[in-house]
Image (cartoon, rainbow, N blue to C red; front, top):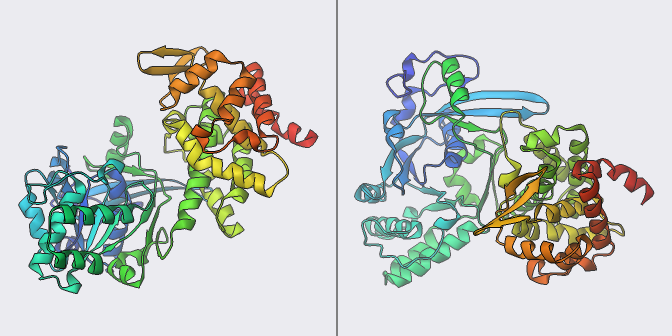
Length: 505
């Protein structure tokens, strides 16, 4: 039995399964969403569905599909899909299956552009959400009269212009636009591109005035691991237990965060924000950005090469190991949290670190360490160099766990083989690909220097870090020592010696 509006009534209610009421299908369309991806389905659409089921928001979503990907699954299932929430919270395993009824219909931009523009004439349409990947928010020369415009900002501008013309530029016809693309200040950047395109398309100055004064572009931050569809084996198990087939089955962790920069007007329009603590609307989301960037992403970056070279392939293998788990906890609580370059209450940092560690341990999510090592160097610079600088500003000692993570980064970036434009390192005699724009630099530096010199040259390279890391008192010497020990005794053995090293330091 395929999940659909028709078969919904035949699905048996059971513990852990959240079924939508048929009356939800009658709700008006209030949201235009650019993107069909799993993150949108498991985060913004998750919140909207939850609010609808509580009778709060009472609005559905029109999804715009910009790519040539097949949308037949949405059509067959009347927009219904199941979010399978799996994870651990406070030591308790969570398993929930939620049939989401928030999507009204999916329209293809390439073939149904006129129908998408018709949505601009709907007075109840008040919200625009997007996730078009980071590449989606960029300025391209675009004609908004095209069918359709080529870029996402171009499509958005065409939609807003149609709305302006329909409602004669009334103040109440303005929209709240919330991009979720993973770039800093995504709302501000999108607004600047849309305004530039409006000028390039020689649009009426009254429209530009309406665009600036009566539409709100919100910066936002999303955080939820959503692997998407489970493996074929797991899909069969879940569908057998649920009693129906779902071509859009979506796996998700329990943790969820959507932080949006906005005022009371934004809160009023996004009324679904009241149903879940994971959705926060606040005038400044810097706190959430710093917590995620440092304690989640920063921990990942100090750990990814380190854990991989220890022999671990996925996150939970490492953090549930008796030795490596302690290393990660101490890195987070004793070194990263105190060094976050933003004023945050200690209890907030501690709670976020504990929650993040639980997420790393999730038995249902296979998060590969190697996928985190992609562009390792730039991640180290952006996420962790500010932590190192702040730590040394606050302390008179070297952060041993950070130094160990940095040493492992250098070892991971030891290119032993180059084939064409691909670079490879080696773990226990087996090659692995290094996907990093700085791979050529490391290939040369490792081939022309001994271990200590590699560390010195790399850390003094201000083009890489925008600073000289060797000037952090004692950091270079500690990294060199840890790197030598790793190459002789292995990374896991190096980590196991950390506590003894701290005692004698």
